[in-house]
Amino acid sequence: MRNPRNFAKPMAIGAPTPPIDIPMRPSRMIHFFDPSNPRMAEKVPQLTDKLDVLLANLEDAIRADRKIEAREGLVAIAQATDFGDSQFWVRMNSLDSPWALDDLLRIIPAVGAKIDVIMVPKVEGPWDIHYVDQLLAQLEAKAGLERSILIHAILETAQGVANVEEICMASPRMQGISLGPADLAASRRMKTTRIGGGHPAYLVRSDPDPEDENAPRTIAQQDLWHYTIARMVDACSASGIYAYYGPFGDIGDSQGCEDQFRNAFLMGCVGAWSLHPKQIEIARRVFSPPPEEVSWAKKVIEAMGDGTGAVMLDGKMQDDASVKQCKVMVAYAKMIAERDPEFAKLYDF
Ligand code: GLV
Ligand code: MG
Image 1 (cartoon, helix red, strand yellow):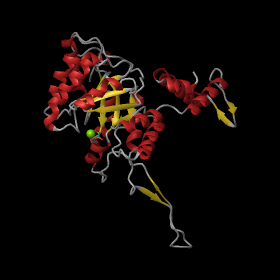
Image 2 (tube, helix red, strand yellow):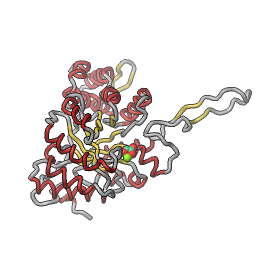
Image 3 (cartoon, helix red, strand yellow):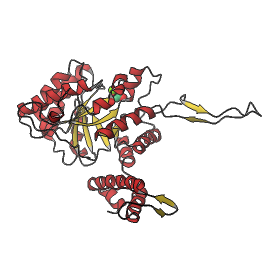
Image 4 (tube, helix red, strand yellow):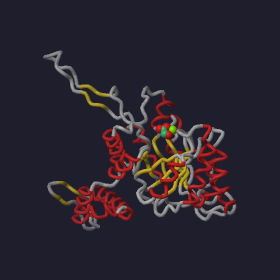
């Protein structure tokens, strides 16, 4: 068993001390780009204002024969770009691949100071996080970095889901977890071939009408990802880190994408991946609290005074618990307002 006194100590001599609390930073959209693609790379500097998180992708969707170009492209882009207030994340290759080790050995010494978070795919258990944790500490020490690079895990294997609480608590570097619905569906042998989103065959149907066997029966499509998102949100919140919806692959279905993102937001997620410019605006809108909810929450907080007891407001009972919900909403909105002037105006802070 690891001595809890050592939990937040650097894992290599000379490495920076990892943070005990992970500050909440706006990360409504984690925008994926292919750093081996010069056309995409050119656009990166113009995107830093608009995006909360820019993510250079080295893993799936990058062809095996483009892995080195992607890694080198990433280094060149990071060297040339001032990311300002947006965050720069990297999705490395999975730990069982032939590229993972070289990804870290190349990019941390070269541009580690620019990287906020390393996203680790196909995490199966805490041992994967311990491996990356130790390696990052060694590389940070060697490169003389002053700030710890955080770790984000993708929840995309059945074993990873079974171990999600331990993954979240495996290191003080853990920043959050994203749902990886495509790999997870394959790992679980789910019978969907879609990347995220629902499935029309996953439904409940009302009972037959006893008087009329031909009467139509209403059906409601259910959410295939509800269970996993709920587990992920609980595991993340219990560990003081953040949960994210991952990719929604049907780029043409903006409505379906918005619905999935909103369900995740309502359940406690703070962002989602954007795979296409169209999804940036969807994530921005969905993961910024609705202005009318913020204005209601402000009213409740004001009416509740010291936050104890109960009051009636527009016919609705408020008490210690509901004022806490409202404080979550207002604190989150304040953070978004600092980053996004358009929402600052809508929230009227
Ligand atoms: C993402 O990586 C996924 O597998 O859905
Ligand atoms: Mg995946």
